[in-house]
Length: 255
Image (tube, rainbow, N blue to C red):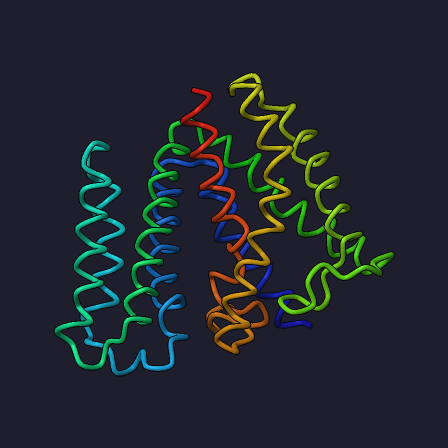
């Protein structure tokens, strides 16, 4: 428990400044998450150590490259990268079709996330709303689930999660993010901010389950041991990633 608390304090100290200030600080944090996630996403594959050494860094570079492209070339480049990773199976003996799909999923998902970070960086206060909604939902679900949780959501994926915790997390995440955002909402689009407060707690719960399903499939407890007592980077940002993608959808439609 002591190690977990110390690590949690360290995470907060490292993350608080980029989230609060945005700009280059946020860009540096996003770049770190992209690179760390490349390893965590891929190394749980059983044959990862047999892959060509260039595959993982190439995928990370592909994600970074899609971010600096003009938007009109985004789909073209992502498509070409997907075709390359898919065809790699034909030419590399120790790279299976499942390995290919793991890499394709990483490039696709994290290109979308990294692209969304670019949208957030313009008015990074939206990220404050997303963070409070996401981790407020996580906190509410934990305490409500422990207190009154009786009806299991999906024991196959996450035995401890209950419907009571799910509802409690949504309510707490919504109230917390909406209340906090009153202090800065004048700088934001009120419709977009309110929708984030309402929808992010729901997506956060879904994101947690989606990443739990990945770990269940590969029979691992955590994505890595980078953060002692907390697992890996992906174990900390799983729900946040889905909410950042949700922001991109809402931002594109509303603004």
